[in-house]
Image 1 (cartoon, rainbow, N blue to C red):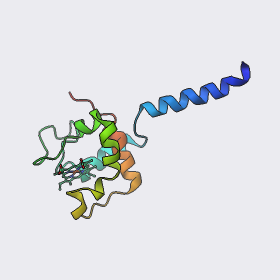
Image 2 (image 1 turned 135 degrees about the horizontal axis):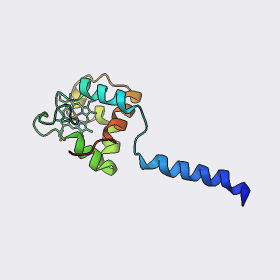
Image 3 (image 1 turned 90 degrees about the vertical axis):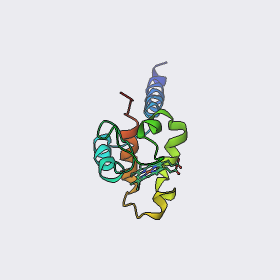
Image 4 (image 1 turned 180 degrees about the horizontal axis):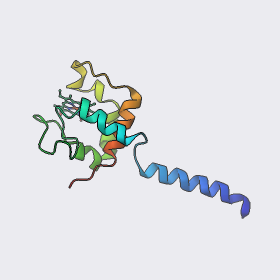
Length: 106
Ligand code: HEC
């Protein structure tokens, strides 16, 4: 039994890391979202009454990770971002996703 303990611990670690659907620096992600996304999206308590037209709130992303995880990852290839030169690196979008994963509607 003893020799299975490390494997078991690794498995538990793996499962719990999947519970948070995005890994990254959530504090930095919030700042990045303020700087790059808040002009059009509600990104949380920073601008609860913000957002333009049909832009989805980041709360919606948080509530439906099965849909929005991939859309966030590829946001710069999706309208309307496609036509803009968004200066957000792959690492930065990871951080933004980590921030999104912490959001809960007030
Ligand atoms: C110039 C305004 C603007 C900025 C800046 C902006 N967005 Fe958006 N975004 C929109 C609008 C409008 C939509 C809705 C598009 C639609 O439904 O056709 C959208 C949709 C999205 C979607 C859903 C895409 C889909 O296909 O469902 C994601 C994910 C997203 N934005 C992420 C981001 C992130 C992350 C940032 C910041 C790094 C950002 N956006 C910055 C306007 C913006």
